[in-house]
Length: 498
Image 1 (cartoon, helix red, strand yellow):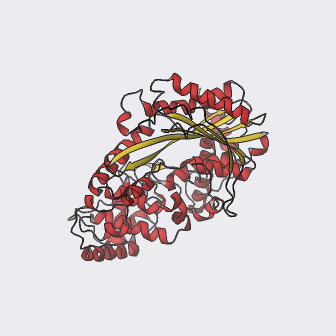
Image 2 (cartoon, rainbow, N blue to C red; image 1 turned 30 degrees about the vertical axis):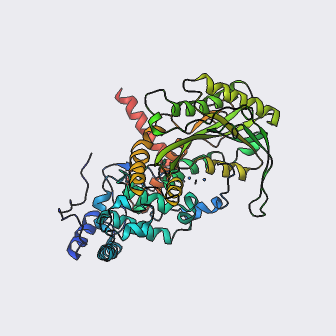
Image 3 (cartoon, rainbow, N blue to C red; image 1 turned 135 degrees about the horizontal axis):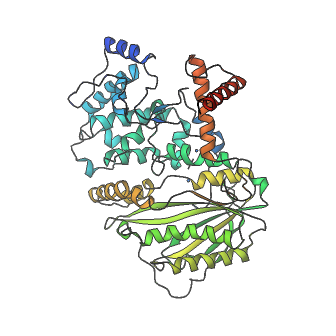
């Protein structure tokens, strides 16, 4: 770890102070850039390729414009990976001064005497009116709200619940809560795609959409399957879409069902709680393992030629008594040589049930499968955006608040279960996974290339362009022929040395 080029900020009484003109001059002299440009950190992170989020019917009609809404303002590619973000908050210039003034005003106007555990932590107004909300978190929340007002994508992301998601992370003292609120500041990103919609978009969804942007025509048939697990046997089964719905025309989708567990008098199962995630083999891990095994079996038996598989989890909260429980589910985007009819889908569902029941803890829930045909490249991209989204916890929290839950117990539950244990639950299984011809080194690969290789190439191009603009760096301004000649000369010298 190399030392940062910035002078270490002087210790304060817990509240940062604006820079005076002398410090601003020193900063610009040391960095060589105007105040407000991204600062080099101790670690560099490649600016990742561009990614959105949203279970049953994808309704992300706005994803086509996300490229225009989520462009980086800075041309600098190598940026700090948030290691020096706290220090860099002192170098925000005039925006920082206004932010501190606004935070001071909010602190003076905060008159709610209740403790943070006793308020609705998803309400940003309630947080700003509470004097127990720390000044540091107050500044980050104000910056986030300011960014939200000017970003149409942020207002639409996460089904309109981006603000409650960030507020809950800040109020709960989540390790990455502040980073998630400041995600995107000076091209810094929190790198938490399981929690942050922006990082999930950039690190998962956009690369996948770009990789399969021309894949629809390369396979005869496409389908999206959403395997999940139900407590009620009357609701579990196969749900096959025979006619798509249309939200703008208020037309509901028509489904054909196959429900072998219905009318058998089977009991309603108990929900899976975070307490079930104990040990290497547990009920939640069994659900995720079944989803990925289903994808592999579809390839092995020849039903599908390629599978894109991803797991996710939704958090639910009961109001009386307050209790948290999970809904494990996933998405399989598959392509096949033959169409998957309702009869074939029934066989796939029976395979899904058999795989689940063959594993340890395979009798805790009832498998459920939703199938929908993908008819165009546009629908394929929407399904990828729909599948690759951060885990949901804000909707369950808001429903519990509306149901009159004890706020103190609810806030303790979400802080302990979601923000402390959520990453542990999801970290057991690597996701997403590509199988068959959707894997870059698979037979008959139909994608546009490895995402990692594509990122590396784009990063190299941007670095060379930036070096050429600055007039520094090895190879700046050189043509491809000159670089090739230089490499040849180096190889000849190495041969002579040998």
